[in-house]
Image 1: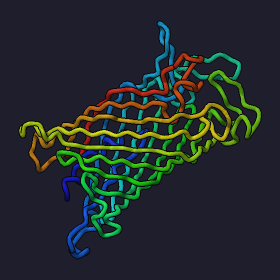
Image 2 (image 1 turned 180 degrees about the vertical axis):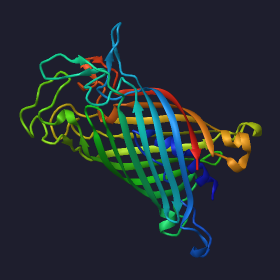
Image 3 (image 1 turned 45 degrees about the vertical axis):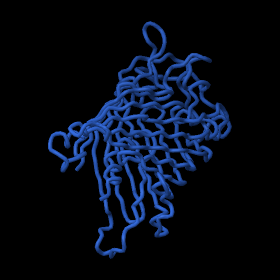
Length: 369
């Protein structure tokens, strides 16, 4: 297995930080010398991992509680449990991850309509409640086909450019809070893979992104708590089934990995990785209903510092069997909701409830099996 593919497998979990969010590694397989196909297994790399991480300052758009001294608290601590699979075969790669995110009480499960309250009717005041934190499941898949491999050439390797690939994938997620979102999207486009120093890489993927379905209780006819009234006109101001469908738009997904090879040899247990995804305006936030426009979404983990604990304890043979890491996560206009203009993100014009931007340091442990 090439070092590049080892590094890809080691870094795969940083891409799953999307968990509620976004994209995956897709590399390429170098063109081999003429060797009988029968001599090679179908999958040249199979890498499976589980991760537990803790995020102290997560958010969920529209979910917040008033602070006793004024202002609004949208911080939601989340425990995240993830499984990630990565493989390399003769023509490309496949990446799959599924995560379960368990929120604290500030992001409550149904029937609470917000943190600690139940709305019993459109006109009555909310009553106190103690709902468990919501549970979210999010899955993501990305697959690539390398041009060098498809065409049996090295023409798409030049200077730092390692390969060009076709890329396609999809995301799906659901959560058991009051809104009960159920997101489905597909992506397709290209990926440009570049080499970095110390046998690292950076991949840039311009994509088409289509969120073709995202169910939301709030848009369904006959609902509309949280300070509104029931919408009366099906198809004009509410949806019969609550199923929103957004317009196709552009996306750019970037991820990188690099060992800190400049460190002294007895300290070469550290690596850095990261990712960023930009997703364009996809129509109205409750599309096809008219209303507030969505905004460009940035979902990113600019840096993750990883300690290869198993290598430090047991040597190179066990490299990346156990990783301990700390990362920073920044997510603006979460799910495309405009943090500056949307009523979901603001209790009044210019008065933010702080729920549509996520900024948090978080940490975790990843185990290969």
